Image 1 (cartoon, rainbow, N blue to C red):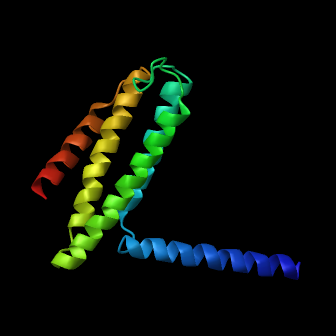
Image 2: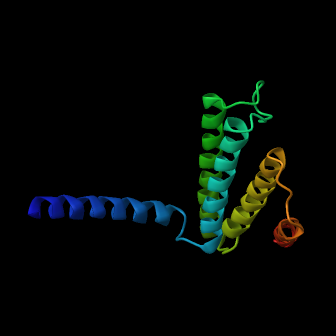
Amino acid sequence: MNNFNSVKAALCSIVGAFGGIVTSFFGGWTHSMTTLLIFMGIDYLSGLFVAGVFKKSPKSESGALNSKISFKGLCKKAMMLLIVVMAHRFDMELGFNYLRDAVCVAFIINESISIVENGGLMGVKMPDVIKKAIDLLTDKENKN
């Protein structure tokens, strides 16, 4: 059991150190970044449902799942996160404290719209409160 505990401690240390390094690139962790990651996950899963279950994806000729298109989607999401890192670095260089969060909100809006579109392709009627929340976020982004 001692060997297991030492392996567990080493693994936790490695994961913790990696998490700390990644978080430092983002300038710490915020609610906006958590929301962005959650929405990215929902968008990706809903896209898989649209293609895999409903076969209605506008991104493939057959409307079905396509591993290349799925990989491209993950690459786009990774690039979005790199742009958040870039915005944090701009904040640091310019002495600001809002560019990173403004970029997060902009990406949250894009992800929200994509989720609503995916829901529509699945035949889900979107509640007005969700549409209004997207409008409010868009207004917030325009003010920034």
